[in-house]
Length: 168
Length: 168
Image (cartoon, rainbow over all chains, first blue to last red; front, side, top):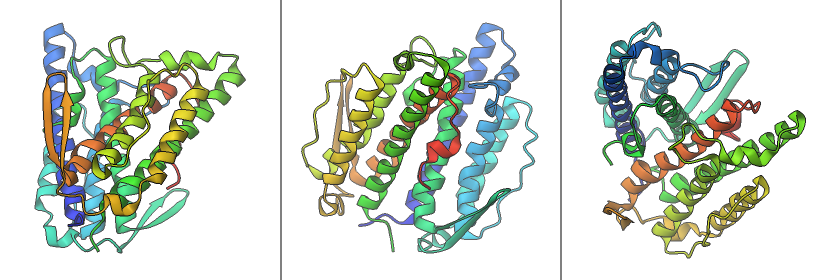
């Protein structure tokens, strides 16, 4: 009855990335309807010293990608964060979704006690697989999806909570 | 090895609400340091027709409270959303944390297949317990925590990602 690690990760990450893709579609439609260059959305920021929209989308892709790569050992696509258009961000999401779909359940389930080490310029963080997923990867993923949502919402794109929640 | 429903809910919700409480503390400190009335933060919005900061905090409290009440059947505190100060919002968080701590593990574990029905003015949504948690309650919780973060960050409160992630 308890929840396998695959079910904790792949379905919610997939739903969230599809929702993000839908937000980008609505952003493009709004830009076209209002005569705005949609690429201007890429530089939207909550405040000057916070990462822009483009980086929020890139990190929303990297978070589940790296989570599954760390748990499963299945090699993940390498991204150089060079996207400069909404179309390129949508391709980034699509390739991340392809990777998520390629990771087999048997490579994820049972990794609850696997040691996961994250390295940062200032040091490292060590987790076990289960608390890494529930206490780090999941909140980190939704942080970037939500901030991307907030930036588009603040720019007047007509989106609502259902667009964030995706296909609930 | 798989993850029990309690571990999917109570520890991450607790960590997130404690992080939110810490964001409020930093907001008060910043207001005092800059001579701003901290209660002005309650009306911050991403855009005019989106719920203000006070509602983001209230909903960040309701989301885990209602999730645990629906799963466990343990009666939850009733809130009338009357908070008008940061201190009252901190008390709301504290009472929510008390409720989370009061729900016993045995009332949550094993509820993966429980039918959860959410009613809205426009209808209802039916879930089973496990997909309700991973596909609705958790993304909804982090939406409101992150939007509260983004609002304070946008207002210049000196907070960073670690404050959102809480005691990782």
